[in-house]
Figure 1 (cartoon, rainbow, N blue to C red):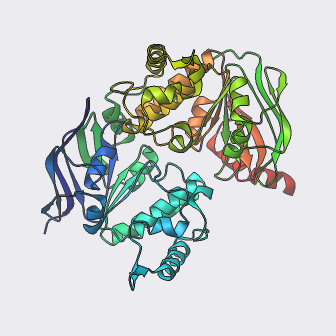
Figure 2 (tube, rainbow, N blue to C red):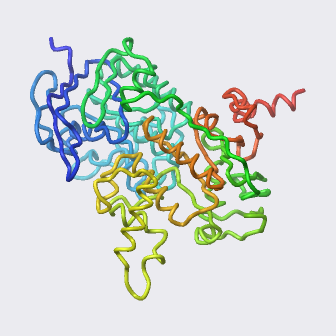
Figure 3 (cartoon, rainbow, N blue to C red):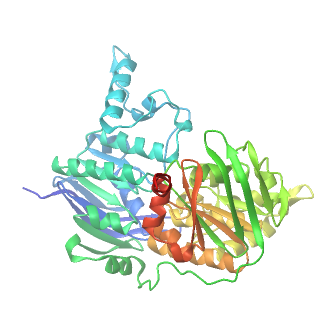
Length: 502
């Protein structure tokens, strides 16, 4: 009996100007987890989209249970027992939770959609997985974490024999991660083959049975987990050894760049006060739902806050909109780059120049030569890897998409840069580049505010860390006080409870 559920043999795929996959071969065993590692752009997601029928290979073949198959569409992939959770969240904002869960597979009864059956099955799924959502809630009203959990639930509910997970934990809480890992163990016990893409090394060595490393569209190595360690995997991924994953630079701080006093919005956050100096990297830690993103959205003018004051360069400013923030030399990279930071179907050039159009549109026309020159220069500075400025952004890797967003905002030459989950869904090598860019920007005397769910990232790169719990600042830590334990005690409210009890 063939031990392999899925075999990929000599698959190649090219896009205009890019050889994405170069004769790749992989095997996934039944009832096991095959983890794919590699930098953004290594070809992982492209290969998975071929297996899921989104793309067609230029050459090579796919075998399921030893039989050659041609997967022409995701619908055909589903019929073959393949289900996929995509890295970039793809959903229709106006759909309800139940509509989204059964999109493309609505049950029919007497020639009509069986909505009663949809409601019953949705409630069963939500209850089984312990998810507190209403079936009628709109997708647009959910957080990134909520949407990711529903995407996971949708894929699991299809009873697939091959389940592809592309960065499934990039936007969910630690508790939800634990729930997902328990579900993976259950699926393995049922004989499900899981192909799991992740950049988080702790996850990889916790759940993998086999590990395959891709680089530049090729399989560099593929071995059982026991034969590899973290340092070896990283070296194989990036083609070099990263001596220091967090290249923190010692920078002399300048004057106060930003001060926020008693910022409040009922039900979201209360009396939030903090400050940041020029050249300083200030982190915000906290559990999902602690209010970190909500504070930053209000500060940047995306949402209104009910009370509080904001000072930039020592002067009080009134921020009612994003335009006010931009005028005050502030910029923000949102946690969901596709939803808030990019226009995926437009070119790199158009995306980067979007927030600076008055520089290029004047005297009644767009000055394209100037736009291309300025955009090209900033993309080179931000190390954006793209075939050309005309390439559509959705064709780039996650890391390069993030650098496009960064390039867009850097054209405005901000003094204050807010980065919400700046390395979500980005590989080790691309993270390192983002961290170096953070250091460069701080050295230019810009103040950086970093919101991150990755504690090692905050500890490695920040000068100070504010910890939020239930919409309030639970504490502030200096660099000498940084430990994961200290941050988690504040994030969970344990220190506060301890003080109250003493």
